[in-house]
Image (cartoon, rainbow, N blue to C red; front, side, top):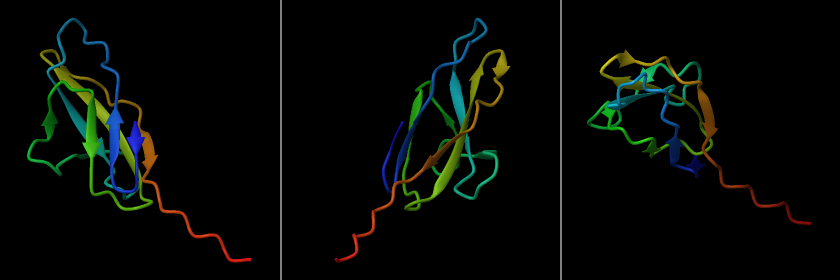
Length: 99
């Protein structure tokens, strides 16, 4: 995982595929609103991502708190939700007060 003021790269480990290759992942998030990550990511043209195990989220609010969860898809079906991970987009520090 890496993050800065406006973007976060979320990475995950491929789960047990139950004997069938992972075809896609669905990424869920709370869109910075708090609560459980149950909003399907729709900020791109695709809401189902290929079998890559990382995704870059851009245009985040400086200092915002975000939660993410991942669901793996294969020929057998969908996995359970991953554990939710919380990330806070970095903020620019305040200048120290003058002495």
